Image (cartoon, rainbow, N blue to C red):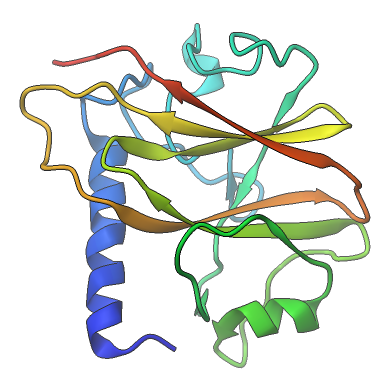
Amino acid sequence: MFASGQRHFVGQALLFITWLASSGCRGRGDGGATSPTNGGTSASLGGPAESAGEDSCGPQRLGLVAAKVRPLWRVPAGCQVASSAGHDPPVAIRSEAEFKQRFSCSPEASSGIDFTSSELLVSARVLSPAGTGARVVDDGKTTTIISLFRSPCPSDYPPMPVPFLLAYLMPANATRAVAEISCTFPPNCK
């Protein structure tokens, strides 16, 4: 459970991420946040939408030709991360009981995940001042976490590090190597 000051900081961090998602200076092709799909997942936590045309940080542009974007998972209503700090490697959650250990939820809330076919991988992270989030791609052998960065614009909000939770679904019992790369979007100042 978060203490009052921690809740305030997390609230400010979420507001900052929301501001980044709606900012006109993000290098996004579509200028807005990715909308939720598939009951609480989204295609990325920042950067251009794949459907917006050419994606400078897409898997093909980064040499990950066989990789497909994995949908990111969002914490359901009534739940919050029980603890997160720093930069943790992805941890697999394979059951509702393991989910309840990592997340603090109201009695009626659940993960909404079918753990017979999927497992949830979560990683506590901190966005650098120019960070806009992350995207996860998978080619069947390697899961690659792409850290996304923006090129600054003159009217940008003052940068600050922001904690966030990277969470994505994988097939149950998937065995993958995990790699990390980064990508910076070209400037798109309006």
